[in-house]
Image (cartoon, rainbow, N blue to C red; front, side):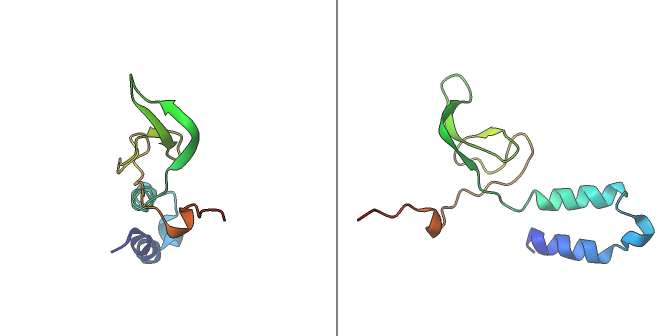
Amino acid sequence: MKPEKAIELHKMSIDTRSIGKAHPLYDVTIEALEKQIPRKPLKLPKPVRMFANIYTSYQCECGCLVDEGINYCFECGHKLDWRVKRNDLCSPSL
């Protein structure tokens, strides 16, 4: 089951009128499921030093620097999507 569907079913299954959104398990469950929805890493304008001799050109939306190919952000735990969409490719100019 995709995380988006699980979130939808979870929200539908809980009567928020009786427990309210303040219930800690409600928020934790939704937050954990949302972290499984892949995000595209943000491209930085120039490489930035991560460690001693390791540089990266990407960061997560939370601001943490991430190296290419890492599946999850070390800081926030969000899943990263490194796939290139057709629209993301540069087309040669004529």
